Length: 142
Length: 244
Image (tube, rainbow over all chains, first blue to last red; front, side, top):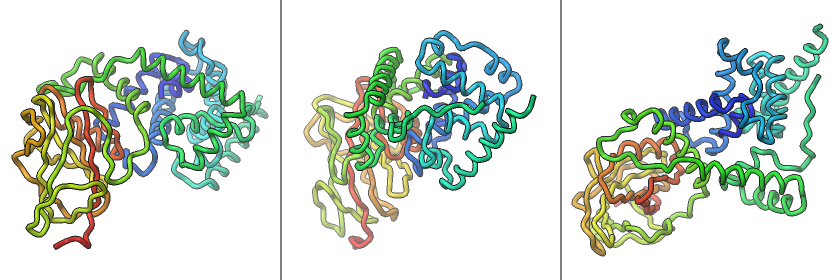
């Protein structure tokens, strides 16, 4: 979870706060994890959503997307991926942020993304198509 | 510019590695992953890197202590609460494994739990791969080499968590002995299916509510407890066809 949060946020302190938030939620409202998915799948989804929610916050968005990696992240093998995530998240709308992270930063298969998002593989395919279209459109914009 | 996807076809994703480490891959997936790792330098290097990172994190994380009596989670200082969450992450990550089959027990040298079943006015000893029925009465017995504190919780076939023993908010003391019967019996409800019973033993009194919350958060277990404490697990299947 911490590795995942570091990769998305590029900031050790924010990553640790997100991990803590996820476990606070798990301990306080455990019923939201209903055992319908494996624990790893649930944790991936909760951590990703926690990170993306943090980035959506206007006050932290600029700080996280514009800042340099903290030393812990810069020293990790994920530093390059963090740069990719930042670039993506600055170019796509919030509705495509999760699929962009799973598809490009995590390089998950469409079956895996469907598992984490709790939707069909066909829907994942549609989201990937929309993501590609968004990125192409973004490239045209001067 | 569209970012590149550099993972070669057939190589494992980090998600697959994490599911493999957590023991969540299906048998066929796990076998395929193991076979791939044996022949792929890229994936075997990634697997080693993830294991090193996991071990380093486990070494740096604080030990998880089961909240003792009168020390609820909300009263802990923020730093301890953060540590608890992080340690829980480690324990869940390291200890989440496929559950044993029905009727098997978790291994361990600590205190053990056993039980007797009263079914249709006939009392029998619990057995491996046991089948019980709604309305059966269960009497638990504890075997421990030293006096201990115990609480018994259940996750039934509908993933509902119950506290079987004690009826209060805190654990109850049990004397040392080979088969000390607990003072209360439990009448099984109508929920059918596989049920796991977790007996938690600690040297000091502890609150039951945090354990219940942990099981509600992860009904498939395992139930992680702090140093000095142990968990013994028994499983049975509740079957309506056996009802008297």
